[in-house]
Amino acid sequence: MGVDWYACSKCNDAYCDAGDYVSCECGESWCSDECAEEDKFQNEEDGFTPIGSEWSQDTSCKYCRKEDFDSETLLEFLLKELKMSRKELIKQYKESE
Ligand SMILES: [Zn+2]
Ligand SMILES: [Zn+2]
Image (cartoon, rainbow, N blue to C red; front, side, top):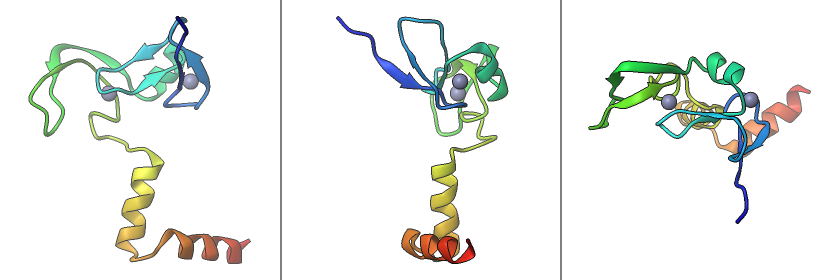
């Protein structure tokens, strides 16, 4: 038996599932109450049903409430909007240095 390690959705710190951590039913999880709070984690008394989902959750956070998205998702969207490839973006970034 081993412990599993996860990365905090907020600060990216690694924590193991044997210790104290907070997780939302959507799959996001945090190393501490403070991190969870910063991502607007909350308990839902009446249940929260994410868009496109058929079941309600007992908890919600800014990710499943669609108030925020992870940077990778936003980056992908931005690149598509700009019709730019990741390579081109890297090139521009280097040139701006
Ligand atoms: Zn954290
Ligand atoms: Zn959530």
